[in-house]
Length: 139
Ligand SMILES: [Zn+2]
Image (tube, rainbow, N blue to C red; front, side):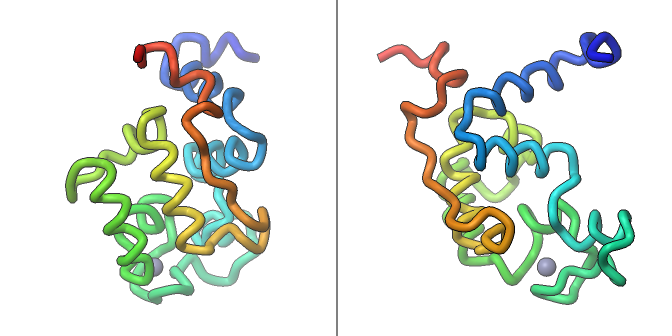
């Protein structure tokens, strides 16, 4: 079963990244990466929600992209995200796969409060907890 994905190094990489995280954060990252997050669009797809529209802003489907990059309801949290990831044009793949920006990503998620009902408090990620991300980072 894993053979199908073996050719895709990005999947392999993200699996590694997720395994190196505290469990709660690993689950959140995994959901955001696969698109199977508890966001209206996915919940609508699997028949839980009546509508895919974002309940926070009512301005579009609540996809992972919408939640992370576009939802005006999370504008403030996103400013912090932009400030810490180097600009307005956030590359979503980089955001989800770069060990350097994961701390910021989880802070964003915590600030939006979006996953609190499922996960409770979102812990902050300390650099020391990013086991997989430390390799290229010599001090
Ligand atoms: Zn929205």
